[in-house]
Length: 140
Image (cartoon, rainbow, N blue to C red; front, side):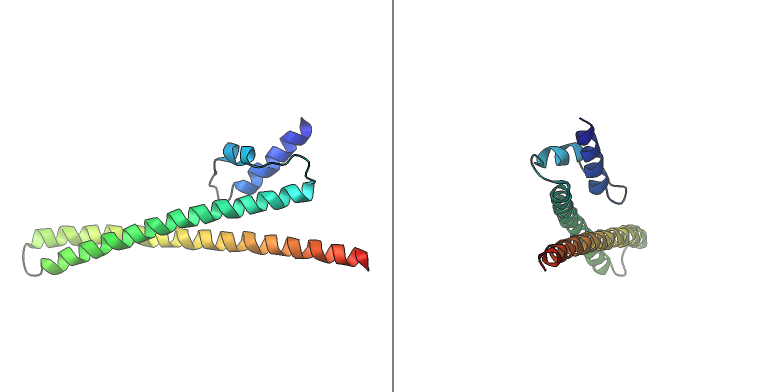
C-alpha cells in the first residue's frame, strides 16, 4: 500500500507539468507497473508524459491554426469594406486586434509546450544514455 501511494505520488508529480493537471487518475490506471523495477517505472512514466505533451501540442496547434484562419477572414472583411461604413470597419478592426492578441498568447503557449516537450525528451534521452553507460561500464 505504501509503495503504491509513493508510486502514485511520483506519477502525479511527473505527469503534472506547468500547472496543468492531465487526467492523472486515468494516466495512473493506464500505466502497467506490475513486476517492473523503479527505474523501468520512471522510464514508463516519462514515455507517458511525452505522449501527453504530444497530445497537448497537437491540440494547441489546432487552436493556433483556427486563430490564424479567423484573422484571415477578418482581414478579408476589412479589405472588402474599404471606404464604406466606418463604424463597421472600426468594429472589424477591434475584432481583428482581439483575435491577434489571442493568437499571440496561443503561439506563446505552443512555444512553451514545445520547450517543455524538448526538455522532457532531453532528460529522457540523457537518462537512457546514462543507463547504457552504466551497463557498459559494469561490463568492463
